[in-house]
Length: 154
DNA sequence: GCCAACGTTGGC
DNA sequence: GCCAACGTTGGC
Image (cartoon, rainbow, N blue to C red; front, side, top):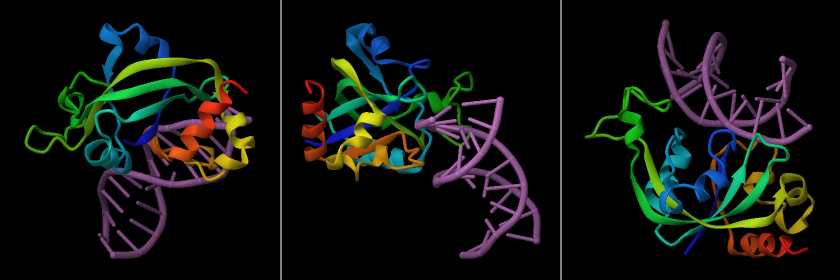
């Protein structure tokens, strides 16, 4: 089982939105970056656990945990001309973009801000703490996962 | 709202 | 296949 970090702008879709979704589950659509796409399609498996990260918020940071309940399958919003994430190059033969389904697990008692992550020497090689890191989906090592879980109660 | 980083596109 | 132009992300 692997760990990941997914970014979302809370003004677009927050962890509270997920908690209030039917069955507390949603499809993680709209990823339009090949590196992230490859992870969604090839690497992210049912049962994997994910930190839910709020970007473009005050402050940005990890706000809780979700889990993957359906591994990669074609992101159908790419084929919907009415979708904000429409991509005319996506077809049912060649869907181009992929998504997974995630389910709410827990919201942290407090958000763990990006500032706080950056102060942790154990997390200095984490993708999300690197300057200019824009990838919306990144792998998290078991060591980083445990370190961050312990921060919640620190 | 600014801007640095960086991914994507398209002309050549 | 290079690379300049352009668009997007996301912290600040």
